Image (tube, rainbow, N blue to C red):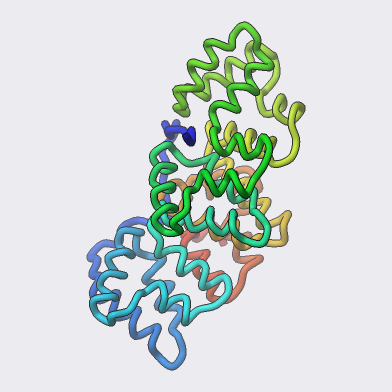
Length: 312
């Protein structure tokens, strides 16, 4: 059983995309149909509509589009668009659980397993999100997510993905001795609030921050996953801000990571991620995307990011 963790957020979380007022799915479907079926695809229209509607509204547009044209909107987007711009527009059309499932499938079944994608998703999602993601994975790909993780990953990294809390408990146990029963009881409960208390208690007992302890004891993707779990418990927007910064600056703009985080967090905490990014790195996320991306791809990312005037 996956041991995701319930998010009991310690601050006011806010996304960047909200339900559009005066929403008319039939009108939107007509505009999209016109944009996709013209001689040249009107990409600005696609951006204006799909980035300015929330996910549930986009699903209603897709339904209206199918009724109107007898075709699937995602298929038409795939056929008319290309490269990273296509990935953004198509990604926006998936419900959240289906999008996570889609990303996990490609991370597991691509030429190389993308461990960092697995870490980003599985270390940060709540129990309910993981449950829905597993259901979507089974429905979309007729495969069991846990079986695919079992066959495509290995060692402690695999074990941790399979059962996050149990492995984290073992890591704590080695450091804390007589406090193991208390820690096991708390970890099995798996709420963010209680895990946060575990990490504080660990520091009180050992005099060491748990992230430093993990970095000393482990390496590779196993270590990255354990640290990601801790960082997501402490401050999820901060975790994603650092992942975005690394994806933009350390990996020569790692498009998949940037796209995945912006879409997945757009209605959850992307506004908070933007704030953490600016506080931590001095420049805004908006500024850095503008610097590294271009064309309609850049416009789509910036529209999701929803930059303010001061972000220029």
